[in-house]
Length: 265
Length: 360
Image 1 (tube, rainbow over the protein chains, first blue to last red):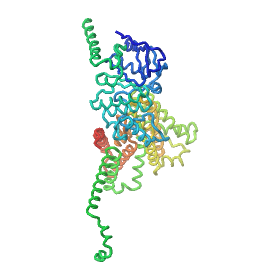
Image 2 (tube, chains in turn blue, red):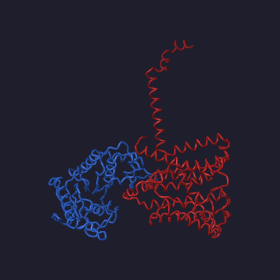
Image 3 (cartoon, helix red, strand yellow):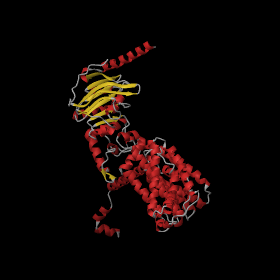
Image 4 (cartoon, helix red, strand yellow):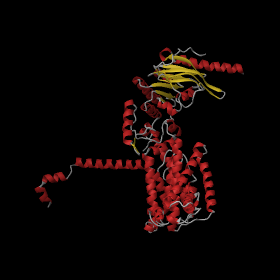
């Protein structure tokens, strides 16, 4: 089933992130078999896979939450063994989780600086943080009427935009967006897609978008990878593929699984 | 005379009397200002729960003063201050814990144990007065750490964990004291007592106000406060951002215990005896939680105010004192207290829904 991926020589330093032969088992369950994936600098990669394909395990390995049983992770061409989420963040890998990232009870600017607060000891330097947050959001084209407003009052799209803006602000080099459009209306989704396009145009950050509904994200991605049964089975530039091809791929898998179940019964 | 003025300085009079357009401007300005004031007022009341508790506290003062004019006499205000102070100090720690999503019932027994520890250190181990008090507070901090360890590291829900510590500490208090009250250590009976908990005087209230002010600032103006709100509001998100939520929560357990221990010591000084039943055991955490909740702190974590808890403690003290003065028996006090908690929590729910929808 595995597609022949172009072999990559170690030390291939045009890649912002590269994982090789990643495997992860949880007891008897093999979540990831042998994952090879690379992400070019300034590239936007769409990672697609059905439930249970191992997407979330892969993300948790890349963001430092899980340690792989096998395989290597290269950041900017250097092999790194990620010890923790903090460690991954310190080397520039940051994850934005859908709706989990922000503290609803805090203002926009406090969220922007969460755990990276500017301090005029012993007090928070609120005025500075307000100004910087406003500048940065304006700069990124995120339209928030008032940075002092509680995040709870904002829409899902605005919250997601703030979470992304925060990661970019903290000098993330590799950004993992986990279901960035989940539970979001068309207008809100467009806001996030615009933000991603804008980031791509600047080229400072490389992005992996994990998406269930790939039709929505397809046109912002440079390349699409499909994860199935713990392996990357498909790797094509977006220009060379289509929603139809991807749908066929996922559906054929579903049908194969159903046929297998039927045969088993 | 008006003729005179008209003749002498007609121009000045024209200046003095605004033209209709000017009047309209003033009227519009007045209308806008009053509208703005109204919006600000509504905003203040919806945003700052302290404001409504303050109104309740003042209204109660007015009501009791109207019925019994001695309510605002100095000696009665002193009574109220003395009932407010220990509760406000304990409630300050409880607010921090509630905001970070935890609770501590054992403060009731830390309150009773701390003065005994001070007494043991001073009278049995010959520790000088001030170090004896500090040692007692260090042990209180240790109790807080233990509560935090069991709740956060061993993952026992803090309600249950601190219920356990509550009884364990009660056992320690009763066993070590043989269930008998003790006297204030000799060396502390003079100046130290006057400074911390004089029989009559405002010292205890001044401590309470100072502690409330300090922790209000800690909560609203420092990283510690911001992180406390974060771990209570969105534990996963806060951890994702790299906030060490264990440290924040355990720290707040320690703060709550130290404050409870200090309040207990002050109260023992004031009543001039170290009593195993000081503060009435479970009464302390319940009153402190009541004060916090009436003051606008949510049990779910993520929001709350220290200043509000102080006002909550004041309202409770006023109620108790006022009922005494009016001659209503103390029994309906609990009925009112229960009602006040329910009403304020229902109002809190309603207000936070308003806030969510942004209609401020």
